[in-house]
Length: 338
Image (tube, rainbow, N blue to C red; front, side, top):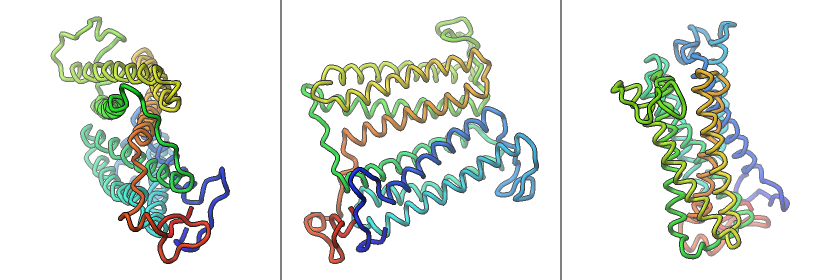
């Protein structure tokens, strides 16, 4: 990947850097889901100390310990991959902010994330820290995805989003609103799970046999707030998909992604209901987090495409206009490998 020495990847294939980003993103996605398994199985304190596990780097052969330790090992692999992405970005894309900035920020957040994970264990998993921990994981995953998207655009420029007549700006705002609502929903859901409020509303769709719960307990109110956020997100996604469908002839890609987001939401809502019906079965809880993360990724990709977050190509107009001194065959702007 060294600038000035890399050859172009064959058409239709991914470069080594792009494959690295894909692997890093997949491992981080798996790490988030595995974190849901840790939470669902109450294995968060399977290793009550940090960075060691029961005072040793070789864990005991016990269910909860192994689940928590597998999460830590996966986090270590994810950390190395994010570091590799950041180093590769600095070596080959240092003059391309759309690649360099998210890759560097992802690694910076990863350091914070590691410290926060240790803090969560030492303090016996306070729900506030657990919630921030998930938020950082989602941010790192999104940054790696944006890094990949920008790198792909350098090697094979992504077609501009179709102009959505009578509503391009509205569609973009709705996409941003959907992402914001999804993040809020997932963070409140993490708090609900971390605080043990998952069954505060004992039924679905009603909450303790009421449309609006009368109980003033914090557990019920927080759980109900999670459901209200889910309803609000559903309405936003419905309008987003409707706007995309109206202009599907001119903007088929945007319409398809908006429809996919709505489909994932419907599936996610059913799995959320299954959590209540199954009394928080491990499989249902893990699937709920996995689908939520996938919905977040789809919306992040939609926003990255609609708002063209991958187009900041060079630090200056002059750098974008001419190759760097070391540019050679198979390289793009500023000596960046194509």
